[in-house]
Length: 160
Image (cartoon, rainbow, N blue to C red; front, side, top):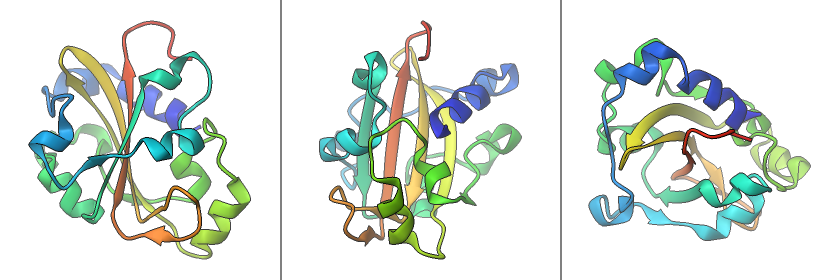
């Protein structure tokens, strides 16, 4: 669900024109506080043919710091894109993955993760980003204080 909402948001004409190219494929090399986290793919990436288009990164930074270091300034946040908001955990992570939804809900309890979503162009390909903080560890046993970044690359074909 979150991925579908992100696709709808990102394809608006105004938003598509307003976001300049951002961070290259080598995110961890340019911003060393980020590390690629393939252990999160199984629970949170959608299954099926689009699964290979997803990459996941984690950073020890809180969401506001992560957005700042990614150089996503308020001036380039059209129509609420990249705005940090509290969201129910299942809305934050969506329905695409195989994660245990009741377990994630219990991890957060009454708390809500903060989520920021937006789109950017990286190496000529549109990417849809979801940043979530705090986020579960890959085993879904505890919450981590940093930020998880889900990146869905969209090549212009059918987004399903």
